[in-house]
Image 1 (cartoon, rainbow, N blue to C red):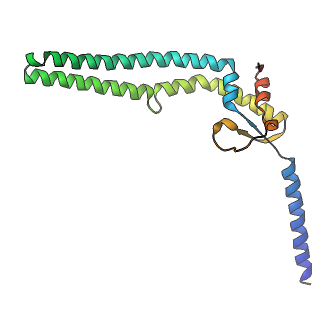
Image 2: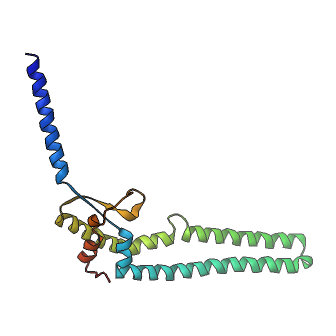
Length: 178
């Protein structure tokens, strides 16, 4: 009598393993290189150009602030002998305030969650949505269960090129590979 439950348990385990192995074989995996896709997309170049233009404008403002501070220090040094201690300290305080303004500007524009990164996210969002939609269609068309992104870090040590679906995503976006 005791042998019967053990045989049933072994039989159920074997059936479960068989179902698991057969279902694992049916799953399809693939990968893309999102960096490659972004660099091939014509809208990405437009976004990069706009970001570069905005960034250059903000960098010029930051440089102008720094140059103004340097000029103020040079003027203070040149007039130092003519100024009373009180006048010297007032000008020094003014320069220090200007330095704080420059640091605040750099943090507001280029710091973490600064205007530059907010603008970058704003400009890239529509493009990322297009790419995500194309990825979604490619995955559904090719019955992929999981699609990895090769560009997102060292998560993949080896990739077989026959599982690279980047070209399919480019095709879905209507971009020809040259």
